[in-house]
Image 1 (cartoon, rainbow, N blue to C red):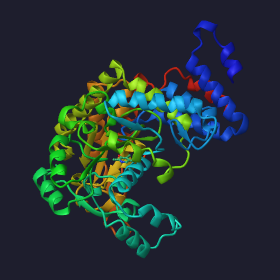
Image 2: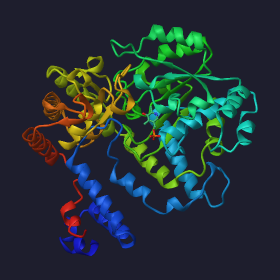
Image 3: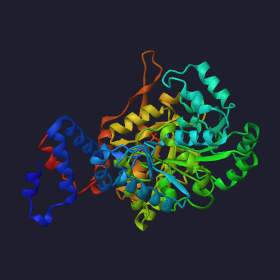
Image 4: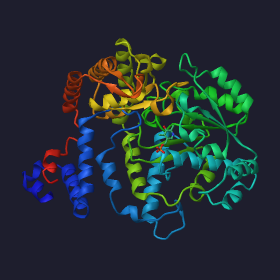
Length: 495
Ligand SMILES: *Cc1c(COP(=O)(O)O)cnc(C)c1O
C-alpha cells in the first residue's frame, strides 16, 4: 500500500498525512485486515453522512497520531513526580505539558488530565469532594466490599456511613447527564440524589425555583451542567446561591468546554471562573481525543489528584499526549474563531428551522445545541433519527421535559454544529441543512403497528424525497471533505 502510494507521485506532491495514514493502515492490516477495513469503512461513513451529533467532532490528525504509539505500553499510576512505577520520566513530561496547557487554556488553578472519559472525571470529582468534606470512613467502608456485587442494603449502609450526603443535579429529561444522579448510575448510590428541572412550558431553567430547591435540599454537591440544554447558565448567580447553603459547586462542562476555551462562552457564563470543581470531556466541542479532565481550585487539587487510587487505575499516556496537542491547538486564534463560529452556525440552523415551522425548544440556542420537538409533527425521536440517518444525516434522538415517549423512543431530536463547523461550513450550509431536515420531517409519517395504531419505531418515507435529500447532502459534503489529505479511493482498492 505505502510503497504504491510513494511511487504514485513525485516526492514533493506526496502528503505527510496520507503517508502516515497509509502506513498506519498497512501496519494494522498486516495483523488484522478486517480491523483495517473497518477503520477505512468508518472514514467512508463519516465522509458520506453529515454529522450533526452535538457531542461529536473531528480531532486533528496530529492528535490521532500521538495516540497511536508505544506510549500505550507505559504504566504510570499516581501523578506527575509521584508514580507507583519506575521509568515515568517521559510520561511525566507529557502529563505536565498537558496540565500546563489546560491551565493556560482555561485560566484555572489546577488541572488533572488522567480521567479516561467524562463519566470517570465526574467520579473522580465526587470522590475528591467526599474524601475532603466527609469525616467518616467512607473509603474503608467501600474497601471492604466487592465493588461488583454490592446489594441495595449495603449501599444504604455505605451512604449512611457517609452521613447521607446529598447531590443536587439537573434531571435527565431536562438535559442532565446519567452521571448526575440517574437511578441506574453509581452517582445515585453514592449520594442521596435530588433533581432540578427546566420549566415545562419554556424549556428554560427557573433560577428562583432552583434557588428555593437549593435552600431546601442543602446538598453537599450542587452539580450544574448538561448534555442537552441550548442556553447559557449564569454561574455567578448560582455561585451566590451555592455559598448561601455552603454547597460545593461543581460544573460538568463536558459539552461546551470548547466554547469556553475559545472565549465564545465567557463572563458569568464561564463556569471555570466560579465553580470549585469543573469536569469535562476532551472530545466534544474541545475537539481532542476521547477522554476526560478535572479542573479545580488549588484547595481541591490534593484530593482530585487521587483519582487513582480512588476510581482510576493507570492513566492512558498515549491519550494524554493527544490531549496536550489538542489543548495547544485550542490555545490559538484559529480555534477562537472556530468556537465563535460553532455558536453562530447553531443559531443560523435554529433560526432557519423555526422559519420553516419546526418546533425548536426554547426558540433558539446560545451554544452549539439545537433541540427539536418532533412529537408536534406526530413522530417519535427514534423515527426521526432513523429516517434522517437513511437520508445521510447522523444525529440523535433526545428526551424532552416530561417526555411522553420515554428515554427509548423520545419526543426530541438533538442537533449540534461542532463537527460541521470543523469541516468549514457556514450560514449558507446551515440554511440548506435546515431546509433538508424540515422538508423531511414534514413528509415522514408514522407507520401503523400490528393493531393499526401509529408505531413508535416504524415510519414511512417517500423514496423520491429520500433520494433528493441524499443528493443535497452529498453536494454539501463534496465541498467540505473530512481529512481531505486522505485519498480514500486509493486505499479502497486494497480491501
Ligand atoms: C458526554 C457527557 C459525559 C460523559 O462523557 P463520556 O466520555 O461519555 O463518559 C458526562 N457529562 C456530560 C454532561 C456529558 O455531556
